[in-house]
Image 1 (cartoon, rainbow, N blue to C red):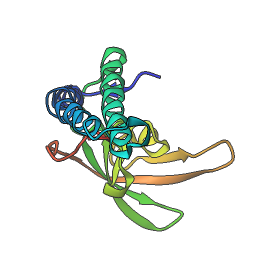
Image 2: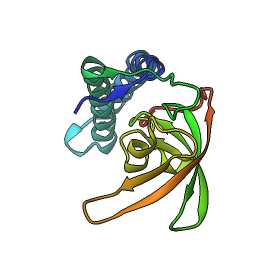
Image 3: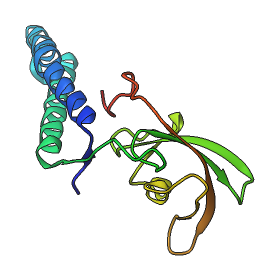
Length: 167
């Protein structure tokens, strides 16, 4: 599946790749060299741990580069009265009689602990493109769905501290 990324997501991924290539890779190579110098490699835990860290970094670089090659670039702008990417949305859940505030983000930024809801999630799909006052059906699976009302939509400036998962 192709990841949906905003231009800002692409920039952050490119920054992570550069950091991993220029900083983390150099540190990992030094750690392997230092551990190798300690002698017998077959029983050298430091060497195996350093190699594992180096390989993990290289895998992450390849993963991010592949993501950029196959990504679908989406706009993070929306009409003033419609829910779009990077909008903060206040939603009233009828079943629970509670309001919650979410910010819609691309799937690689989704973090429910910070109320960053992916546009690929059931809630994100139901809210995207809708307007304040709309009653939306949120389909979790074939057997369960629930209703919510969009109370308020706010344009949100992107927070520079919002990181891409993994960095």
